[in-house]
Length: 356
Image (tube, rainbow, N blue to C red; front, side, top):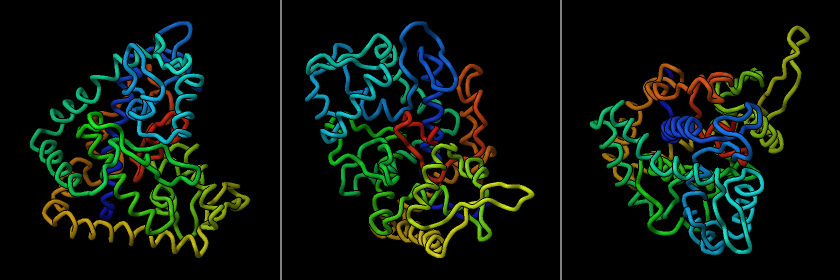
């Protein structure tokens, strides 16, 4: 039995589980290529496989007939510089759109992706209602909507890609009215974003680093190779988080005893303070939410999320029931996910919630 998880961890685990189930289904339906696991379902030029965030942040705003590039920028809510980078990724890097002059069109592979993406959120949400029961999911939707209405900020209904310092920086403006829908993953994302923004504004520490690295670092240190397994975050994302932690002088990486030669991450005094602040601040934000959004709402949110996630981060969690990949999916070939992250690591690698 593990200790009381922060509210941000419960929100994260539910959102990550939903996203992975969504991604597994998309991968099964659409021809694609991957960096490490080859191609599937098609020949010739097919898009690179990406995660749900790439659909939510960008591709859902692209109609089948195409769209003016400036109008697409407005709909995404992205600043012009960030929008240009997204456009390069979705066209030149990943092959979902083409850009002709000032017009953006989906490629043939992009059209197939759009057809698969459009109904997927509703389909997975319906699965969850059947799997966990409407008596759990519907009250969860209601209480999240109630809290979101009181946030005072129109957060987007998806997580942003983490910045260079692994800080959570949502778009400067939410996507155009009519696209931000109160779905289960959308509401989870809005609340998690609100929590992360409050956490990082008070601490100047990345919630992703605190939740996925500092939290797990014991006094005697922790083997670097153990962090992906214990955090539920990919080794590539862990490498970025460790680099950031060492840059901030929160810890150091050294080679262990001659008998193992394993690399060990050990916290500095500043790192131990940051780890303690992570725990304290996560608790104080929940208390702040209790005052701002009502004790009944926050208590109910926690209770419902705990019922959804179960008492453990690991495979015994009910959230793992929908995470078994298709036999031909890349996750079936990769090391099995054994934990659900306490904060998503959404990176430019494709937006996968565990940084894969």
